[in-house]
Length: 406
Ligand code: TRP
Image 1 (cartoon, rainbow, N blue to C red):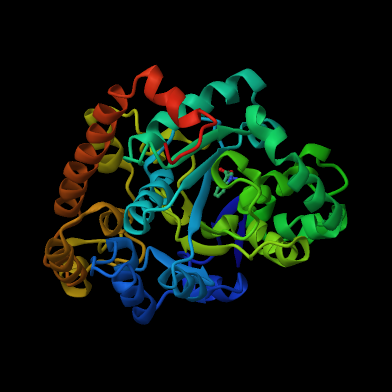
Image 2: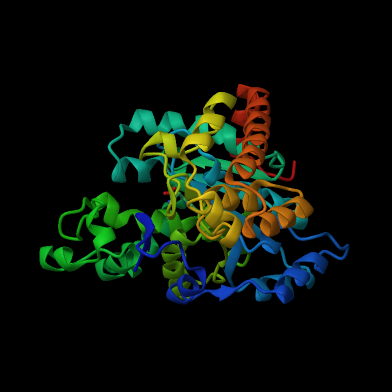
């Protein structure tokens, strides 16, 4: 049983089964044909991102239509976001690194929503705290290398007025029942009691008792898919399509807005979805900043912390004894270190070798962990160095309400 909603992402299966999930979410699979279209659509062949080839970005909606229009010269823009309630971890970077790749490939504007209001509604955090994380987290996001001339980052608390007309229109079209489905919320306590095991462990409210900020939240995450939410970028136009790169758990919001877009006179947003980076603790839960920090690699961790967390806590799919490991090999589907290498190791050949050797029991968990430790320390240190270079002026510039073309 899966429990994947914007509020939680767990499965009571051994690991997330994405062919099942894709059906549940009514998305389409990213296949080889779509990948080669992405490679050639800009005119000059550019190899697809490793996350497309490795199936980390695995599902989409309307990518073909978006690319066909792009070939004909129609512009689009990218929208993604971050709920700033804690330090960022390596799992959060997937959507931003990928958005930056799309920006480079298609040379399009990016808007990034920092949903400090959302975190205030949903978490035990003050407004001041979440607003502070907006700027702290934005530096980590900027460290992915976004083009400062084509990227606008905004705090919802500050920017909401510009989007408010679109929010109000969405609010009017959205019923409480829509919201219940979007979040997978039960109706009353009876239903709550019978909901699946993994649900019970989370504190999912029901629609009668959750606060009204939570009920109203969806429209605020949806409004940026309408281009006139950004008059300084797109003027009064309403025809520029939006592409949203995000993890699959955010999909319900965008399904909802796809239902409403045409009624309001906008193109439906296209979507491109990633898998989750799992927790170090095991392959059936996504990495999470608010549970035990020893199972999460944060962008501000020191090399020693990273080494220690991976060594001690990364769930192993290796055989239970040396004999069993040599005989049957490791179960790569549940091996967390291997799953992380699939995401963060650039070298395709080395990954193939690990896939083969570890899968066959020729390589030990310790060797795989050692490779991962190196990869993660390099990744995190690089981000920390880039973050140090971001001055207040650079940060302010990304948040400035200015025309991106000059
Ligand atoms: N809801 C997301 C979170 O909880 C943050 C977010 C806001 C977002 N807008 C988005 C994510 C758009 C993806 C795309 O962290």
